Length: 595
Picture 1 (cartoon, rainbow, N blue to C red):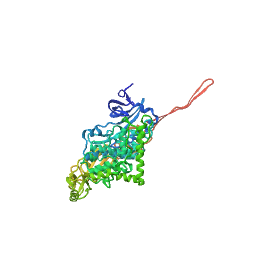
Picture 2: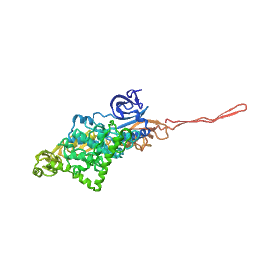
Picture 3: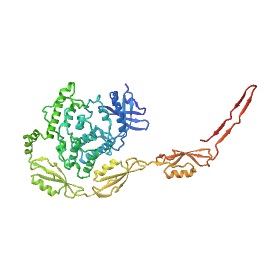
Picture 4: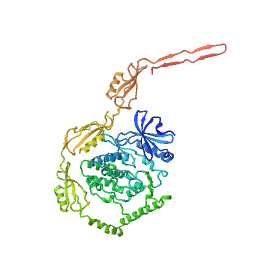
């Protein structure tokens, strides 16, 4: 059998070395021999290509992914089949996966984590608007370049794998259990809000260095996503800002209706957090959104599953070896649903459960409930907290809010503390002046990240330019100028070269035609002379033709008259007479043209 490294895929992609191996494919560094550039080549395992419906889906999804052109999405250049498998050709991104960054550096600084999540949300928002749901957002699918640019990989592939019952049983899904939304874990239909949930889990991991749910098997983890409330990030690191915690918890709401309804909404909140502005997630925050329905099943048996798993047992009774486990889990899920129905109908049994001695004991065990003191003067906050027997510590931070105003607090309001515990407050010292970073000639994503991290708002305007697509061509105020923190920096970004229209120069003299082309940023290309009745030097035709579009500085080829009439040769008829036969040869006319 020929190994992948010995093959030339699509008659142009030469494999150099293996980069990774996953649950469905191997990834190689390869060379595009046609365009002379490095690429990443993902070769799917042959067994996936034996399913006709998968192949049809793969083609659709690969095409959809190839149509996603965005600075935060790994570009898909090409796809195809070779012998008994399929492959995808992608942009080769230098840098690290987010999973490696987390392993090496977690917990990340809150604003760094928010900036990364904001870029992922930008990619998701663009994909969702184009009808593509990722379905497998996780740190290993997020790449970070050396200059800090964030790119999301593998759009469309999870959908191609998840849609066939032969690959994933009815009511089940394929994916990584740690980052699955509850609706994915139950095999339900999903939309972009499922990606929002997964991004919430990724953000949780970035700021804590841990994941919200763990278990002995992927199925056990998926079960916890469905049934258990997510822990607060501040349980791991109390200094995590309250607003960022609110964003995480809203994104991870159990019901899609309680989450951000779009990735764009989540990105807006992340940007507000980076800018020190109040976030929508913290307004009227409702922890019920992330709280699981109380379970009534006392014993749950989990059957060990492989890393790529069938979560159907969460929503249907499996057959064979897993029947008992699936049945027990199903009973637990149904019992929860029934209990939820009792709550909806106002059943008294649920009221007794909420007021049980266990709940009462927990409340009595905590001496003080922390109040909300955000957005009030520090003096008022100190009075409230000290009046409850709590200590106060403060840190000053520049902010657009009035000097002396509390920006955030740790622990968040509603937390239970014993008397004598300390509540840490971040207090505004006012906006202050900051020098604007110089972001000229940077990629717009990197430029926005730099400016947002420096505390500025960013406005972008795309204008056609000879610079590469996405390059910042000008900024106002200029780099080095000092303005108030929180001010707006306006960026002009290249949308790529503008197309120009080829003018109609047929009938003009060559010199006149050249002037017309020059006025449209076009040049004279090859000139071919042809005999014609038109005066010498008259343009007879152009390529490309008049009215078509071309890139600036393109050459236009022209056919020009010599001024000589086309040559015509006439031969008189010839008659030959023999004894009994007369043959007449028809006259011939030959026209010679220089064209």
